[in-house]
Image 1 (cartoon, one colour):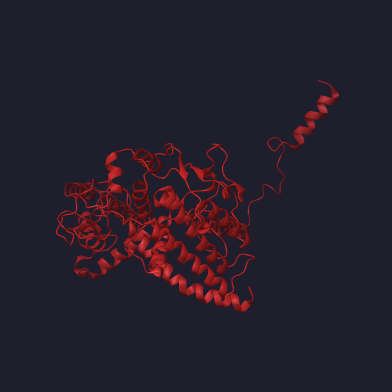
Image 2: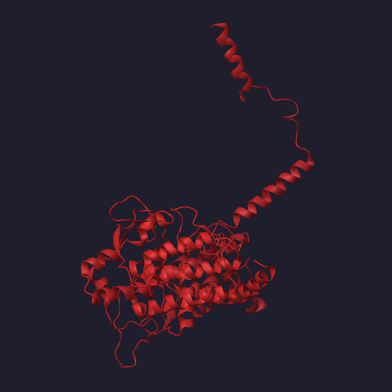
Length: 466
């Protein structure tokens, strides 16, 4: 080994953390102040990250179950000594059967009774199990371990399984979404545009993002979302989750749209690469389809030109789309109301904004986000589009599902078991994809309260000269 090589090895060892001896200072024990500070920082960081460990719907369900259970325990005779520490499997089944099913059951059976869907009850049981776990009761319940988690027992499992069979045996009556016509779509866009114009008259101007300016952007976002749902015939959740990266021009399969793409002004067709939402095992997404968007005489009703306008509005209002791969339809930030969340708009939020706009326009008839899919497919049949083309765009495989969407009969969401004419509405196969509107209704109430807060926030911003 030459002298040069030896010097090089010594130089490497001098900076190698595995060979360098630690100094006495580095090996000194932590002081009590340092230990306290580290624990404090770990506690704060752990609490911050723990808040994001579950989705909002799971957190809300656990809170609701806890509230209902504590109220139920408080109303029971004190002689029973019922508490989270003493409840047994039969107590859990009593709570689910007497309290939860009768208060929160929305699935209507052919017998006229209502009860939660089997999947909903599993979610409630999981929330109840978590509540006992948080109270210190873990492990499988048995006669030999009566103070383990009572929800982790064969009795409760059999109860859940039996309810599921009961629901399937008596045939839940799916409620078909009321179809939304193109005339109503135009009225929706006009309503949102008039609300935006009213905000401009109140003093909304372009500039750095504020609470009021993001509300202005949301009106434009909703109009674009409704146009997209109608033109694409996708489900509400899949449509709301779309991003610029999921859209491309037919001539170039892999080139997604870019922010401010001028080709949107002349394009009459676009290719959709739907996100994977319906497969729980992380399987491949549905096949790509073409979405024909004819240029409407008025740019307000053309998805392509409206998309370009929306991207420009986001930029000028201080909330630009950060990247083509990000979500296109984004909600307002939760912790910071002067920012947009880098996540997709939820189906519940879409349903809330839709019903509010329909009611404001005076044309609400029980529509949901699924109404775009149903109305657009029926309109496509009337305008001469072939069945195979419609099935391809909607990602429908069977003719039975196609006919269920395009059937003009029994189409109202809030229909009785027997319609006013005395005709029994035909049963539809179990599994029709419909939204669960319970969370959406709660979200709608929050949004109505938000409108009042918005008025106060807007007045404060205006007074401050923003």
